[in-house]
Image 1 (cartoon, rainbow, N blue to C red):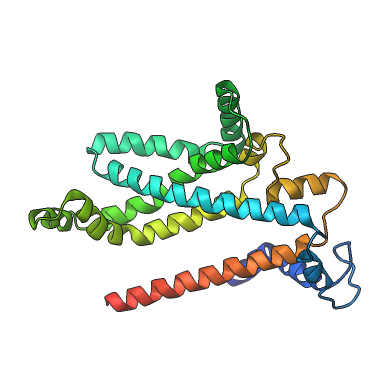
Image 2 (cartoon, rainbow, N blue to C red):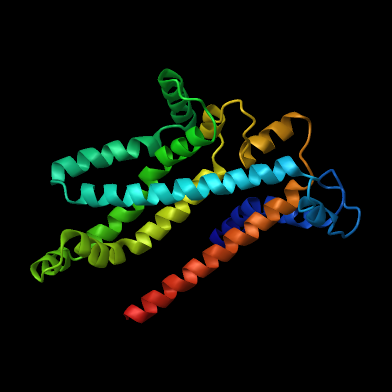
Length: 260
């Protein structure tokens, strides 16, 4: 019974993805209408000028996600180290504050940031979207790094200081290698959340013509249908994410075997 439930759950989760991938190999404009095997949608997706706005939205999404994830990883890692070195009561209080943006609804975060930028007179566009993504991605990085700090032997850092290392050298050569797996996990999580976000982006994107993949799909759906080239694009993104997961899990297993 449990196995049957698991298969049903997996079917519900992955059947829509499989359908999109299958119908990315046909020219039909309507999903569900198979007109024969074809790679036309893939060639059309990357044909210069054919879907200029879609490719621009994809580039904007990737660049915003990379910048946001990188900055969030740096800020979140430093914040996690600071939180870890606080006293127990202060650590609990700051950890609670860090959890609020995660538990808070995305629409509330989006409206709050929108009102903040308006009150400060900041023109909304690429910069405000990046700042907004950094804001809601950083707490996730903190949560990814903190467990690695708790597992670390604190005496190693103090031993490095006693042996003549400066605090910065001890931080770079002792703490960073210990928390690197958490930083990588936090970076990937922040990257995924940034690419996936819609609610916060739509409130901070402004009206200067900037589009991300989520806002492009939303606007496209409101017109009465989705661009067929979104199907091969979705398939490509899925393959890339799957390849990254396989590589990361392979490296993690290799490290575990090396530590035994």
